[in-house]
Image 1 (cartoon, rainbow, N blue to C red):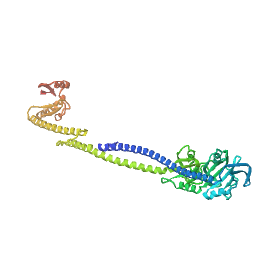
Image 2: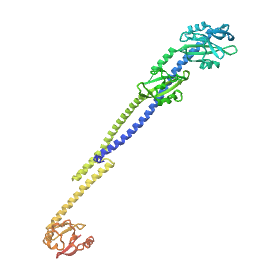
Image 3: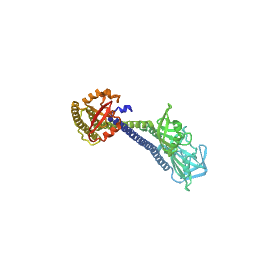
Image 4: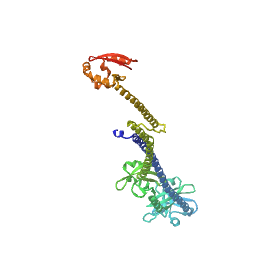
Length: 506
């Protein structure tokens, strides 16, 4: 506080305004940053969702094109078969890979082991084809171009009852969807083959190997970027050991996505994979053990039982927000400098310079320089102060002039009184002696010893400033009389044996 008290008013005012403006700009910058950061994070999450949705739609479009192509191939295969109704003869059996199967005919042509039909289709389209015959609750392959890993036709094998294709066929519906058959990925199309009564007696199957197309799709997912560091992860959602397996990503393929996420965040990951939420913030664990907090969005593609995850590290967003913060701070700092420069100039013009004039006037008055005038053209408080100081200087100059005249007159009177033979003493209204002429001084000095008998402290040389009450026994009486004095009064007092006759004039 002592240091502040040494500063000028303008400096203290400037500091106070600077502190207030700084606090206001700091609060404004913080509010703008918070609002901008929240808005930017929302835009990031929205953009991440949109990008993930577009990537999911890319998978869906590939699936749709592949499904439509497989369905067309199914119709082509049907057109390549003999004309006529399908019939099933349970009494006539045909050994297929040493397994007895009911005889299935289309028109008059038996289809069991009719390999030339499925081979011709395979040669024409590059796909695979199979004819299933119904045997009890099973559907058995009786003609097929589909081969296992050893290159053998998979004749005599049955359609998986737990698969989606079986459920669709059992309901009299076609089924189109991806499947892994004997180690190869196919887009499959199953169509029920019905007899004249509408009973499903067999299945016509076609499939096209989309391993190359899938590999191309996976490569596109690996190369797809979100900003500078963001990426996509395709996750297998099928139940079993493959659930959570990464099927396409820049890194981590063949491992589970759960193994790359911090344990505390795995419940949030499961909610994403289950479709219960679409956004989350997860920490991914790198190979060196470091964690990377990231924004994550998920889009589930049910036909393939895939989840597409969009991942963008928080550090990317933080870097942008940090840059935004510095821009806001720089803008606030520039604005603060502009405001403070304006404040300093205004304070100098409105406060400092007028106060310097006022200080100079006060210094001139203190040093007795009362000449000159202050030109004031303003009507505010400072203007009124300067006018008042100008009036004060003028009044002091006039009063000193009058006092000088009075002093000169008094000097002449006192000089004259010193030269008269009459003893003269002058006292002020408080009865203090202010003048003793020379004759009275000389007379009192001559009788000083006698006067000291009644006035032990009396000194003729030390009367000025003393009260005239020292000459009276009853000062209160004299004080009352002098207070009521209006005309000349004559009196007589005795001090130290000396009789003094007094003529008192108001």
